[in-house]
Length: 219
Image (cartoon, rainbow, N blue to C red; front, side, top):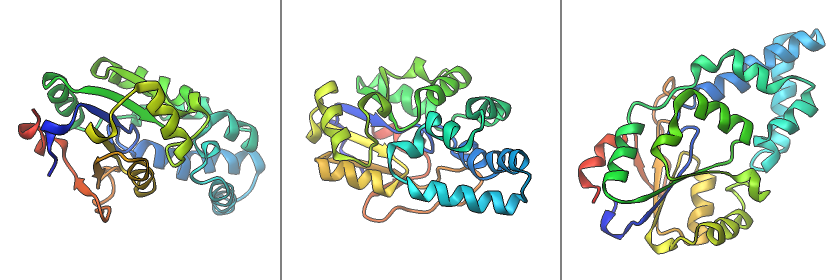
C-alpha cells in the first residue's frame, strides 16, 4: 500500500485522523445549535438551519475552523461549550500504536491541523497526544488552511521536508487533493473518521480504517 522505505516525514491531520471526529460532529451539529436555539429563543430545527447556512458560507476557509470567528458570529462562548462535552474527546484506538511504530522506525512525525490553537490545546490536554509527536502545528499560525496552496508553501518553508519523501494522512478529500497538488508523493485517506458512522472510502487515494494494519510494514 505504502512504500515506507521512501518515507522520512509523516504529516498527520488531527480531527478524524488521530482523534475520533464524533466529538466535533456532535459539537457543531447538536451542542452548538442547542445553545444557539436557547440564546435566541428559536426552535432547534431553525437553529440548525441558520448555523448550516453560516457554516456553508465559509466552508474550507480558515474562518470555518476559527473559534474566535464563531464566538463573534454566534455570540456564544465556544470554548466553554466545548469544555461542556470534552469527555467526548477521544483518541482513535489505533492512534498510539501507529505513532509508536512511526517513532520506533525513526520517522519524523508532525501534526498539521486546521484546528484553532484553543481547540488544539483542549484536545492535547484531554489526550496527551503531544507526547507521541515531534511537532504540533495549527495552520492558524500561517493564516491559511490546508485546503490552500498558500499554507503548503509556508509549511514547506517552515519544516523543510522533501515532498517526494513525505506521507500526508487526512480524512478530507479536498485536503488530500490540495496536498497532492502541492507535490506530496505519499497520501493516505482515513475512511472512518467518526466512530459512530460507517466507513466511506475516499476515491483516488489509498484508504485505511485501522492504522494497526500498517504497522508491520513500517520501516
